[in-house]
Length: 444
Ligand SMILES: Cc1cc2nc3c(=O)[nH]c(=O)nc-3n(C[C@H](O)[C@H](O)[C@H](O)COP(=O)(O)OP(=O)(O)OC[C@H]3O[C@@H](n4cnc5c(N)ncnc54)[C@H](O)[C@@H]3O)c2cc1C
Image: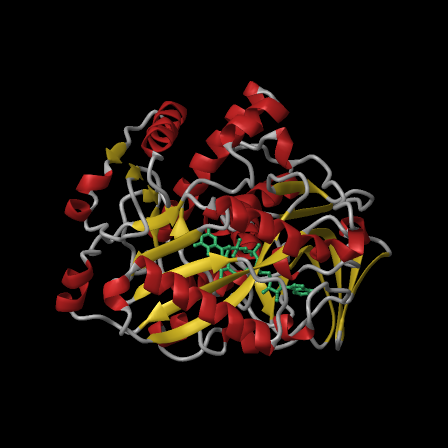
């Protein structure tokens, strides 16, 4: 597999200290590796939210499905994210989407975003998944003074887009909402979304897919896709022959699988710090007791939430390499940001720090469509860090396409062939410059 990060990114080190492991009983769900040859109607590569949701959608329609993961279901971003469920899977704002793709298709995209939140909700209800849910919609906080008008305008736009009210919180009322921090100066509560435990969600989907009859294989990395009476997938100790193929590898994709995507997706690291649980007294001292999930207005944004057991979870982007030195430097940066945001918690230790790869596209919007040059093959990827919500939906979209259905909002902009990043195989080299520029902008 031709992957663009250091080997450390594709091993266990980045998730060695992940908090979510301590919230479940026992290890994740492993399946046997594929040995020998098997055939099926639909093969899925990748067992995160995208692949599992595609598998469930196919199995619901009585299809014969095989799902292969290089490690095990939930090993990728789906088992290591911040658990924020909300609209926002594009890298650009709504105005840009309208300008670039036109009002009509943009409207379908916004409908898809809304439907993606509903689909997560539907999975939770349908499968009775207990995922430690909290937060009513999400809260967007201004990282500098003087942004009130911009936040209000954002709330207005959101409100007219989704037909739902927003609530503006001026700086002087932040403390009354449990949002007291010297780093944040106003807020807007937006009504769509909630937070969940991402590992409980992915394990729940995995169990349901298994129950629905999906044949699952762990430690079964597909190293080659060739053609011969359908798709022939080569794995370390076996071969899968499938009539139709769905690719769901997102930030863990490889440049040679399929070749059509070489240079056309860009994995980016996202990192999470989780503190020890805090006492009610400590929570009160800082004055941050809101259970809302929160994002700030920085381009290199922070996402954070007070977890049900009173730990603070803080996520951030902005590191380029996956090496021991880099992991340590990013943890130090996360800690410095945490202490600046919550000075009364300077003494509260970090207990967990981990990271993983999200995926960007050059189109700056997610992709869920046919794989160019491969018949009967579809892929979904590129949720720009919004995949807890969009990945299950995009998985369902490509499953629908493979079944020949069109039954949910599916904008053309998500089916457009992925554009190539200008630097192709060296595209990661563009990140330091981008991060420096975003950092400068955020601190102006
Ligand atoms: C630290 C972090 C925090 C995040 N926080 C949030 C958040 O709060 N809210 C939000 O909406 N999104 C968040 N995201 C993004 C979200 O987690 C992802 O967009 C989503 O999980 C992607 O799901 P996926 O199924 O497409 O890919 P993944 O879950 O990454 O799964 C891909 C799978 O493909 C497998 N694979 C790859 N290549 C092969 C191969 N050749 N053969 C077989 N298997 C293969 C991998 O082993 C992996 O299991 C976060 C991501 C990270 C890393």
